[in-house]
Image (cartoon, rainbow, N blue to C red):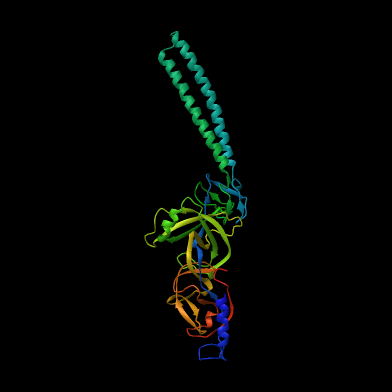
Length: 376
């Protein structure tokens, strides 16, 4: 900060001198500046990812019939077990009654066949009937026993079909658009009635460069923190702090893909977020940042100082004579507040953080404010 104050005093003393670019009257371009620092920063990797529901369920019917009612509003949050739809149950009630009657009928026949078989066993021992007749009676009883078992299975299937007329939510989540409206006739497992996305917890899926995979694998088994903020950018684009919006959500890394994408040279990761306030919405783009560890003695500048041009990223550095130079920089990592500079800047140098639009190399500047450091 002392260096910033000294620089401001030097610039005030230089007002009106020379023919450098700037506003009329010889005054420098008003800018805000900050000092480049060396400090320990979190070692992070940032990428644009997408929000994915952990469970995405397409609700379909197990039986056919007329869809008589939908018991929810589109977009409504439903709990597991809540009734979603009703299919006309009358045909299945009749089928259940028929199956029940068949069981009672064949149980009666089974009782008669078993009694006949017992009588024939006694008579065959006294040689009043032949052994073949006794065996036939036993076979008839066994056949009726199998028939009753089949009837009972059909009765259970009829009960299930009647239960399937009431369609319940298999998960807790939020419903989408109603895809089939009441009054339509549906077939079993034919059309999706509605899609339910689980909102809490939720995934954020993103891809990071292959070079960070050893660091991630070295910390597997630990709770690696991941933050996510909604972004206006799409996957594959370079993350920019100006594109993010909303508050940061905190989660943990829970999935590392089993193969590197040979086309992009990236590895797919997934982080799980509690998403209690449902700030993360399925299908939206987010800027995800995974913390790998700490980087000591890093050269750090404010992210607002880093500009992007045709030749890449650059900053305006304020020199001792009150003018600026455009300097190309290599940024290793950055977030909305600070950027870790791999090449191009040295600790103690002063960079412009606001007012760059009016600057050109060699322009004279007038410091109107300054930050105490890049991280504060």
